[in-house]
Image (cartoon, rainbow, N blue to C red; front, side, top):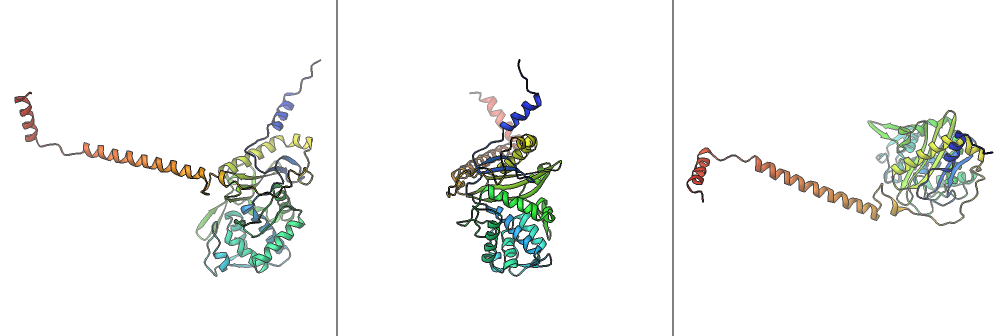
Length: 353
């Protein structure tokens, strides 16, 4: 007797086996409520967090607010240290002040490096003391392979994390501060007359997207912790090391779509949770993908070739434009007077040779 599997079962099994893959990079997809893992690659490989660091910065600020150390009425002051931070930034002049809530929105939506420093100084008096608090909080949350050196994720030796640790942080953020969830799904923030858009493209393009944060430096590539909710189910996709913002968004969307399509079967197969998933590596090697980044000028050969191609195309366009102008100029010359034309005709008639 031949046993025939229902078509729906076969389709589901195909989706399970056909998980979206790309060039190897740390990746994790999990159910936000249960922590059950739906897909995982290189969960324990050390990586530069870039601006994903600001998730922890916001977590520590929320915690300080809950303890009454600061409030929405607290004013952030642009110090000399903050004013010197490179972009992405708000660019406040030295001594300028903004409300704490607007600072939080700028940190989360615009990923403002200067605001991260201003928040750190408002909470702890200095960035060094604040970073120590970030690390003690990370340890308490079980982020065993994470270390922070600054509050904004700008390039600096020793600032590392893993996708598993970022998953722990995302879980803690959603569990401990649901009252602040709306900040992470804001598509833009207004500061004066400026309307600053979020770097998280999923908030504009993916059905159900509701957070959380992107990050980029040349050595890390393009990173994201992305969340989405459909029919009461919230999934979180963490993607590190993509070559461009577009690749980052596409990879996260594919993972989330895959998760919503296969969640029930994946939970039935039980691949473990964020905590119980087998350790992928214990290596302390830190990977840099600077030479694979195409979405930003990182001094690599790929970007240099792209610039050279663009320059050649520009030169070709300029040559075509000059040639067109010459043709147009020749066609617009003033015709000779009738006398000259008649004389020329007479010459041709009387002297056919």
